[in-house]
Structure formats: C-alpha cells, structure tokens
Image (tube, rainbow, N blue to C red):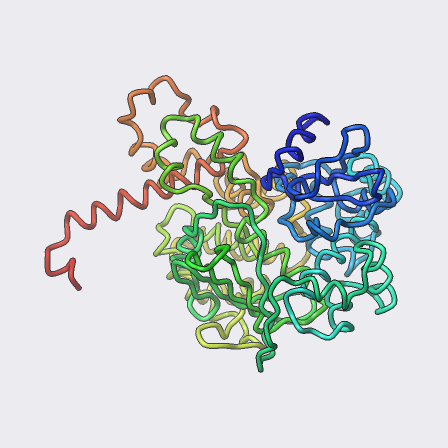
Length: 499
C-alpha cells in the first residue's frame, strides 16, 4: 500500500488494516491503529510505520484511546518469505528471548550485524526493538486479561527484570503497568484457579470450521476437539504445557477464549504465538475472500463459509511426522496410525481429562517406530529415517524457513515428495499460495465444481486466485468432505440415519 491508500484507510477507520501498519502523528507524538476513532490527522503530519517497534524507535507513544497493541498481528509475516518475514515469525515465537540476537541471526544464516541492517531497512527497527515491542504486546494482554502479579507478567512477557518491564511499559504506553491494567473494559473477580484465560484478537469474519478440521485429526490422549473448541498438550522449550481454545458465536464480540491450564511462564510468548498460528488468527479474511470469490468456482463456498482459516502447527517436527504418515491414506486411517504411534510418547507433566500424553519426540519415534507403526515397510522406514535425522540435528527446520528452504531440506528425504512439502509449508510457515493438485480430496473437490458453466475457461491450478491458493485448497477440502457426507447419507438406511 502506498501513502494515500493507507491515508484513505485511516480516514475510513477501517479495522481490517489494524495491525498491518501504524499511524504516527507528529503533532501529538503518538501512534495509532488505522481504526482509531480520533479525528483524522492532516496528511502532512502523518508518518506510516510497518511495525509498532519502528514507531517506538522514532519516539512515538501508543495511543491510549485505540490501544494499537491490542490488535491481531500482520498477515504479512506469513505472506512474506524474505528475511524480514522469516525473522518476525521467529521473534514472535520467542527466539530472541531464548537465544538472543545471535541465535536469531544464526537461524537465518546471517551475522547479527547484517540482520540488524536488513530489519532496520525493511521494518524500520532492529531485532531487539522488534522483540521489545512483542514483549510489550504480550505484557499488555496479560495485564488487561488476567490478575497475574506484575512481576509474573514481566517475566512471562520475556523481560529480564521488573525494572526493564516498568520502563518499557512507561515508554510505550505512557502509563504504569497498574494504570494499563485499569484500562481493561471488563473487570472480573479472579476465580479460584491456577488457569489463565485470555481473549485472542482476530479479524472477522471467522469460520469455526477450523475446529472440525482439528477435531477429526485429533489423537486421543494428546488432543480433543469439538465443532467449537480444541485442547491439547504440548512440549515447549522450558516445560510441558496444556491449553484449550473455545469459540462462542453467541456471545458479544464472538470471543475466542484461550485457557492455559499449565505453562512455564517463560514459554508463554511462544505458546501464544503458536496458538495464533494454529488458528490462523493474523489472517486478513476479507482480502482473501475477495480474491477467492472472484473465481466463480469458489464464490458459492466463500459465501457459505466466509472467513475460512488455514490451520497451522504448534510443533513443526510433529507436523512432518503427521504429514508423512497421512499421505496417500484417509484421515481416519492416519488418525489410527498416529494413535498407535502416540504410545511411544511420554506422559504429560500437566495432564487433564482427555489430554494426558505428549506427542512422541523424534528420538522416541526413531526408537519405537518399527514396533508401533503398521503398513508398508518402506513408509515406516521413511518415517523413522526422518525422525532419526531430526533427533540427531541433521534435519532442522521450522517457522523461520522459506518455501524454497523447506523444499531443499525435505525433498531429499526418502518418502517425502512435493505433496508433503506443500502440506508442511501450509501448516508450518503459513505459506498462502500452495495448491496441492495431486491430493485426492482436492481432486474430488474440483470434480464437485466441474459442472460450473465457467469452469472450462479457468485454470485447473486456480492461478486466478493466487497468492491465496492455500485457502482455495481449504475450500476444496471442505467441498470434498461435503460430497462424502452426502454420499454416506444417500447410502444409509433410515434406521442407520437415526442411530
């Protein structure tokens, strides 16, 4: 977007652009979200920034009226596969908090000096400033959503000391942490529980079908799911964690509530980032749906299911194993195989009803895969070989990779082809323009659209909706599932239909 496109967005107070850029006003010294209800400033007094960190570094403070940190993240970090996009995915996952700038630079293949120069040029702020802004945003979320002690908030957000926390909150928000906590719109009495519950911001519309996607693939003991909720255990850098997400379409604001049943506070920023990635909460559904609806084959599905999300992954290594086991078999068969494999995992240190086990580590899969997995020997060998490579460190990939980087790392593995890499790219790095043309369910979904009068003139690979073909894939999977359900309904007897 150029300057005037952004200026028109703030003049219209369009909430769709919240989190995608920030508006700084020289005469007031503050920066706002695009939908800020304050009077639109004169264009001559406005500077736009890609990140809140860049606005901080330029000397601006956050607006107390619109609270620009209380917005979904920018979808650009998934859309962009350059160094800046890859760096932001890792910063949001807490890499700087754990490994410092040197660790982030090493993962991206640059020196810390080079990385600082690249990010300052592309985003207007260096890695430390970007990480500081991320900590401030996490701290604000905890302050207004929980009754955690201020010291606990400081360390949970990634600050190294309470003094650093107090200084940052004062510089960014121009108020003390206690005053910021009092800005919460709804104050509830603290419940007698150790669980933390936070509302996750997102851009509307939101299609809850993502919960069905996760539920039918849920591995018993590790995950549970319903049409409006999802829960699981998870291994994070410092300790096990357990979380659940619930969607309430009937409540005001249609909240997505994240409940953290157990988490080491040092892992909290990473967990928040991964849950957001899992549910694709930083997506811009209006932009995506507008592009998809321009294709007459997809327009009816978009009208029926606006705001469809693309599921992410909370553990890249786990996702690769699931993809390798699930390729060329049905979802139900893959779930059965993964349930058997889950016996190799250890018990969770934070169990709860329905979720008491952790997905096995690569080392556990390498050790027990032959014993637990069923099916073609070649596939079992491929899965255990990939697990061995991950356990030894020879195969290292994650949120900071690009699509080309994933291809270079994964395609040499036995049993890994373009479908596997594409699926991993969709779910691990959020690649938006992957079309799984060889996928059986995608082909079935395409067949269900074959009768459209305009379909013969359109490309079979859905090039017309690029760069959002990953979301087209999700719509085609949904169409294939509807066809399969309709076929089952036609073949069932009235007695079977009522059971």
